[in-house]
Length: 522
Image (cartoon, rainbow, N blue to C red; front, side):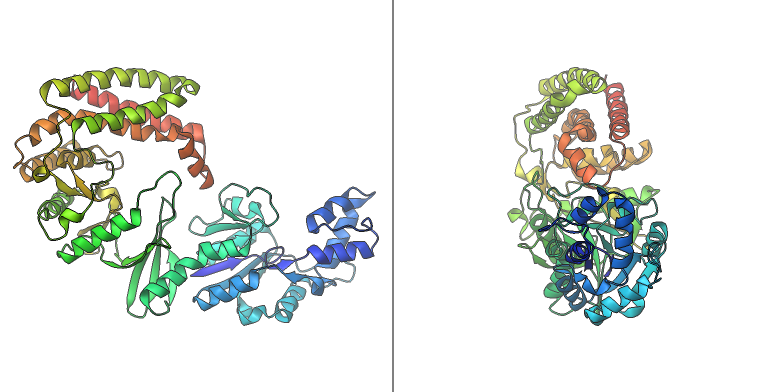
């Protein structure tokens, strides 16, 4: 794992140094106790205060650099990182000379001397300390170093257009009453940063029973984080499952149990479950080398059907009956209708602020009433599907959760919602998922294959015909989650862009899906 860190006000703390020198220069009132930022505000209010402040800075980072102190907690953070095998890099925006220093003290050398005097070169290689003339050059250096994470006290660094997307932005926000929000994660102290960045490294070593030689982020999004773990025996995958206030489901337990079950029965189309630490939210799996599935063909549809066939064939295998229902399983028509209605209610609550959404929901409600009525007149919606006709389902099944291996085969991932469900739901979700972009021919191929696979259930075809449009309605509601306040809070924390544009895109998708559904089921 490669971690970068800023120097000024991140490694080096100047609070007491600025206060001491400013008081010595007669720039502060007697008894002043503030830190650097408060010193700046007081001095700037003086006559010619801006010049006085710049003179003070010029002297502080040169002549008075020895007065600086290590930021509280930074040494422990760096020691812990090095012990875990992380590579450490310092990247600082620092000119060589101060603009208001007549003695022309070399500021960069003063910083290196301070690092030496305070023992930092026992933790960071001398040649891994970089000083750049501008913020743009600093960000370019960060990008060139291919860092997994960077720690800085300035939000502006993370807002630079060139800041690399793959580098996790960690804002050191000590002293803030409320942690800032933006394209970064903010932390109040180095203990919090250590927990966030170093706990995965240490968890991998514990589960392995030996140190790991490297750890790097393998993705940058979603509810979970995936890390590539390098060991002497090969590459592994470490997955972190953070607790989510709005989702109490045991995602780790479900996925690890599912993969352990499948592995015990020789299913090779999924990663192997190796070890888990449920209390800390980590699990270790085999690493799958591959690329996202793009441009799927007939062979990929057949591979998905073959995987569904393997799952269906394990219904009576040892351990299968102990597996839970899939997340949001729909084992009756009434459960499917209830899920649509619940999602509709949530969107209806926010619709008054969105006229176009309100108009869509009115049209949607009429379609829902008609399609539910049609289904109810042709079958008993309250009847629960008998266990013998259920299947084991990944629940979020499709090429969006798969990798194409170098041999061309597919490995299916993300079984966090795995469990027992109606085969109709698996089938409908596969062909309707908006991230799949299947052609009409591919959809028909999968539907035909599913009909053969689940044909032992005499009611499968009827349920599929009646429920497919209802699942399309359910997907319309899922697509419109963008309008829900809690969804946008998460996106804003991740640095998402224009909210209105995102809402407009999702509304257009939902309108298209509803129109296609009504055209297919007049």
